[in-house]
Length: 399
Image (tube, rainbow, N blue to C red; front, side, top):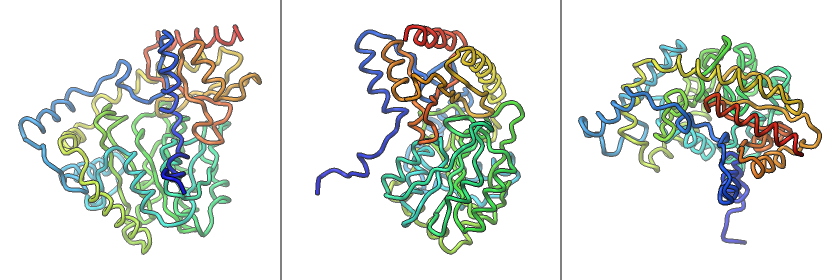
């Protein structure tokens, strides 16, 4: 027996683990072009002014500087319920909402609330899920996203991989890292399987308003119905451009509250929320006020992202070593490396970093179905994306 948790040491989070290697390269005098972290505020985007004003109002004028209720400020829970009705036509009881310190804490709380069993995670998928479920000792089963169909979930695989010990299927829609958007028909099929086999649907919708090309992103609770056991995750980091404010929430459907077992899971999550006291109270107040503004910045944000996506995808496809489809959602591309010399995606990313300073994330860091791919953000201005392409092009030419 040792003094360190083997589960904790087994956790991998490639997106930030790579920063260690990048810092070593930076010490050598090379400029790092950071394309690894999905943070719009590290580029030329800013948190909306109206949102910032509400935060100042909370701290200075309203003096909301004490602890909040563990489940969240009532005004925020009501605003979140209003948002679900306004955007998706879903009726949510504010009592069935828990406010968290970002979606990451929501994932953590969920993982610690489950008993023994297996979890179905999308592959490729955001590594926070595999990290927390590794920590809690759950069996992780990856279901593939279909790369030749722009990364929509493989419904047949979900049916095949699930069994009597399956606790939940996680749906990230739009997906990180691929930007794929699961159409309502696919979400509906997943819902049918989950209800037939009696497991929970966890729907991560943090990128829900960031879509292009008329992609049909619709809330899972709207598509499947609130009678099914569904827990929805969302927050302010991406659509509200407030990554550092760390605020998210989780919504339990009526089906969770009425289900004998998943009601107990939800009650366990509530207990966890009390143990950690509360999420940031001033940010909760600001978010409650801002949600009613209905995202006046989102149209321009999406317009810029689409322009950058179209440019970057076009230039990537001009490289004979890479294939890339245009993602219909989020703000990532997930190109495939078709050059046989670089099928080891981790080796490719590290060699590229050391020679050029360009920092992507290797695709296998998002699960076994991400092999031979890499993820890049679409967030930098076009001139920076062009500089990136030139460096990648020179790397291939010189190796």
